[in-house]
Image (cartoon, rainbow, N blue to C red):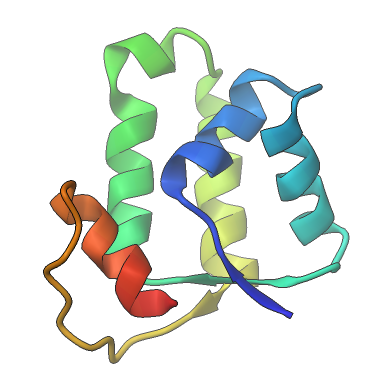
Length: 98
């Protein structure tokens, strides 16, 4: 099964390790599904992890490890169709992935 996750799910998995988002991230890490991503999402992930409010909740090594895992173990899709439908333009790439 191939799955697209919103960046906030990935980040929330670090912030609340006992929460539902962490369970989803753990399921991906356990190989229960293939995570789809793209360069735009990886850029958004880095930017989100650098936001002061988020950075004070997540240790730098945890943030770096998450980015590295997504880059290494997620299936990166390079040629996405152009989509402009979401209220949040950062989510257009996620919609294109799906």
